[in-house]
Amino acid sequence: MNLENLEVKHKAFGPGVIVSTQGKYITVKFETSTKVFVYPDIFEKFLTLADGTVSEQILADISSSNEAKKKIQDKKNEENIRAMTKGIVIPGKEITALDGEDEEGRKNTETEEV
Image 1 (cartoon, one colour):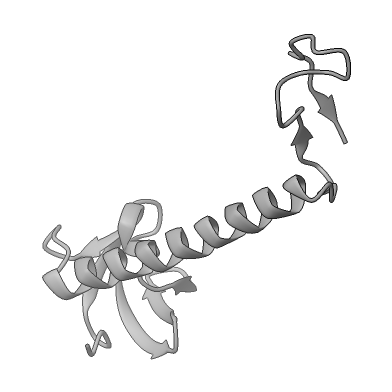
Image 2 (cartoon, rainbow, N blue to C red; image 1 turned 135 degrees about the vertical axis):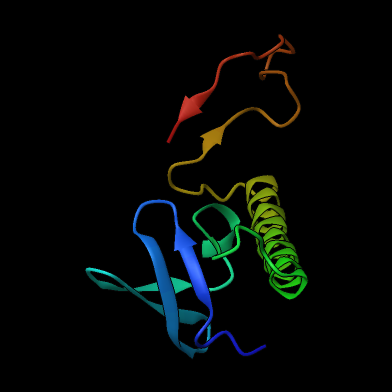
């Protein structure tokens, strides 16, 4: 999809024109400055086309990007769970007893910050 020369509107910077695209980055020239943004993320909350809409292709790109981010996060979560079940401590993660009981069979409700 060719985004160059599309007129856009940013919530903070106002109206502008997309002057270039390089990989996942777009450059937008506003009245007082030129800014570089991550595509398609910028269209989720801050940037719309000049007519106030977002094209179907941009929405599809946003959806694909969000799915890819979710897959990455799910993989990280799985790796963290595997690590914790093997007794590997992950810095900054809250550790709780996996079986919910201490050595004497009492219910363990305390957590420990590493």
